[in-house]
Length: 153
Image (tube, rainbow, N blue to C red; front, top):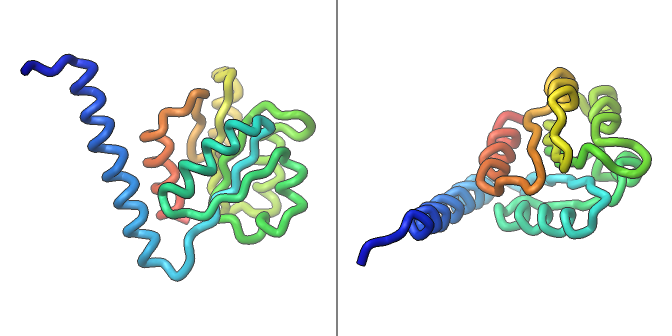
């Protein structure tokens, strides 16, 4: 039987994602405690999906509906990485990134947005963002980025 291009792509996806997850879980078992990844997004479904992905990698996830909620939480001090939306009610993800540059300059920041404008990407990268993703986010790319960010932090 001849596999179609779609079948081949699906098989590659099935092979690569589980291996990336297995690699991340093995690395986390070597650590005394799982890194905490904080997720800030005003869309509940995005928070739930990101939290699920983060937990599937063996990391701990903490989700917040606003930048202000994250900044006033105890997770501000113990989070190892932040994934945040750019456009939210109240403080934006870019403003949150600026605030973290003062309070937690060691924390890697990954930004996601529905509206990927080049000037916003440039501002985020100039401020030190480790990545800038468009929604819907490519899960494999996010896994690789998150693993790299946590390895270097």
